[in-house]
Amino acid sequence: MALPVRTISLLNQKGGVGKTTTTANLGAALAAAGQRVLLIDLDPQAHLTLHLGVEPDQITRTVYDLLIEPDVTAEEAVIGARENLDVIVAEVDLAAAESELAGLDRREQILREQIRPIAGRYDVIMVDCPPSLGLLTLNALAMSREVFVPMQAHFLALQGVSKLLETVGLVCRSVNPELRVTGIVLCMHEGQTTLAKEVVDDLETFLEQARGTDVPWRDCRVLKPAIRRNIKLAEAPSFGQTILDYEPWCPGAMDYRNLADNLLKSWTAPETEAIDTSGDEVEENGSPEIITLRREASEPAETDDMTTRGTSHQSHG
Ligand code: ADP
Ligand code: MG
Image (cartoon, rainbow, N blue to C red; front, top):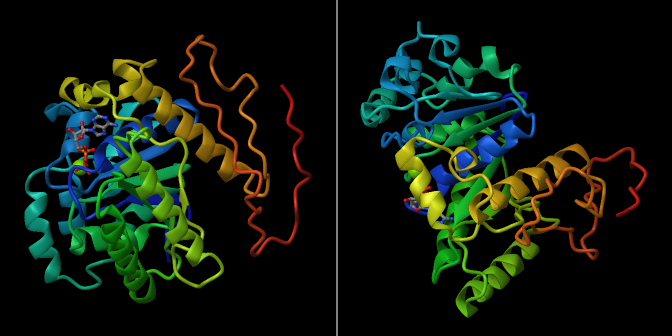
């Protein structure tokens, strides 16, 4: 079914919400934390490819070749972008792949089957989806275990997200029963505004209603921290740099690094209730912007399918 590694599609049918920014910078932050990361650019606009500064002469094969040419292997398409960070790039031709794929057998499974031989090399695979729900996106969802939805806390955002979740529900039933929506990433967040606060409250309420049901977003969380609006994040792509290359101590870099740290903690110790980031993992830079996050004390540990419980970790520090 889904690939046997943590595979995450970054999905929102709206453009301009932060999918590519999150794929590039969260991917870079996870790689910097020691995870072996593969990023796949599945958007014909190739923004992820540009963001990572991949030089045209490094490119021999693209994700388009992988989808359309059965003889091209993922091995040939992988490009080393940074330490621990590989990428399979897109090109503008990818737009044509959508119609070419339509004529093929098992057309939504092609990417998964192509990536499978190299999947074991990675801890995390992240796919930057196009802002549409066509065959390219279906290929991403067919190979993924998880979906993260980057979004902005704007008027009507919740309507868009609830429709998107319904769509994932359909894909889950028809193509990939293992698929789960596990995280909402709030991007360009302006947490001090009343509107943003209201939207986040509504979102939390909406997600709460799904707990204990059988919908694929039943365990979905609003991931912490939200990514603040930060101009450095918008500048970095034009230099072909991730935020960690470009301005490693700006708020945007801190937010993506903290997001990566929190995800890693939840992945390695899902049964641990309190997350304590006081320790040496948070780098000392004297900045007040380091956000130490704790899960809400009221939040129950996820005990589904769990046969053993780890001993709860003591907070210290
Ligand atoms: P998508 O991939 O969903 O279309 P992008 O990640 O390309 O969205 O983001 C849309 C635009 O917003 C880009 O110009 C990007 O640089 C900018 N942007 C994304 N996140 C932030 C942020 N937190 N602060 C400021 N600008 C941002
Ligand atoms: Mg994009």
